[in-house]
Amino acid sequence: MSKCNKCEIRHKERSKEEKKQLINRLRKIEGQVRGIQKMVDEDSYCPDILIQVSAITSALNSFNKELLASHIKSCVKTDIQKGNDETIDELVKVLAKVMK
Image (cartoon, rainbow, N blue to C red; front, side):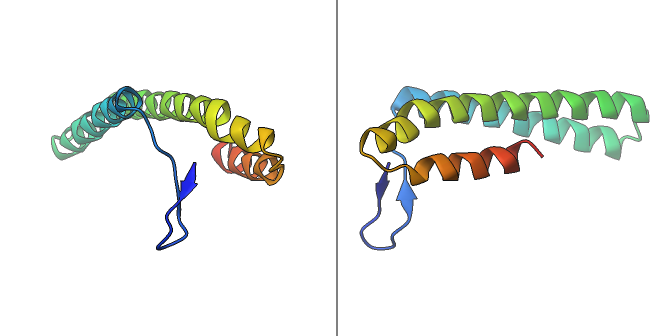
């Protein structure tokens, strides 16, 4: 993790493969959302829509797990090794928000 010198925003440099995997997951989720929009537009049966929403929720949870694992194995690990224990507090706050 690094900071942009111009704006002080934190950045995470990801490998091409990691970016590709994350973007592919998001595109799949985006397609699922468009599918639900079409179902609503076509007056599909409510339980059928709810099942698709549940599939999207599961896909988003999987995305979060993958991103969180990557964050812990890279950013959190590096910060702890550097003695930056504030990262642990940040992780706890993020987990509280993610697990609502």
